[in-house]
Image 1 (cartoon, helix red, strand yellow):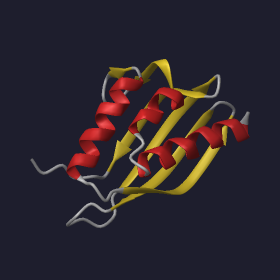
Image 2 (cartoon, one colour):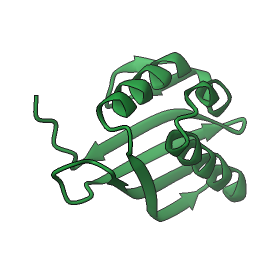
Image 3 (cartoon, one colour):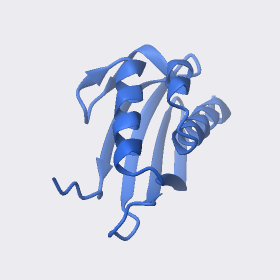
Image 4 (cartoon, one colour):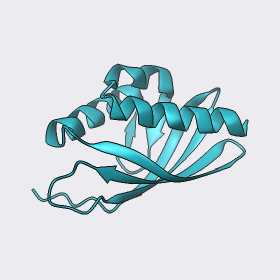
Length: 114
């Protein structure tokens, strides 16, 4: 189970970094729930990724630490390619079900000036 959880996490960050928004359909469950955004489904992830890449086209997420226990992963990342900021960090915790991310919690140090 641990290797499966780690693999889906790496797949998610690789898809984000490649701007492969369509991959969300394969990475997230149909009933995926994002606690920070209050949204459901892989389409909500696709839309969030698209908005983020429109604002920061050179953004790349680098995994700094990953801890996996059972079907849950906690991942600390840094986000490079955000102008005017030191690479902000994010902490995401997600639960995997049947090889896909089913639920996500997260905190971010990314400033949103708008």
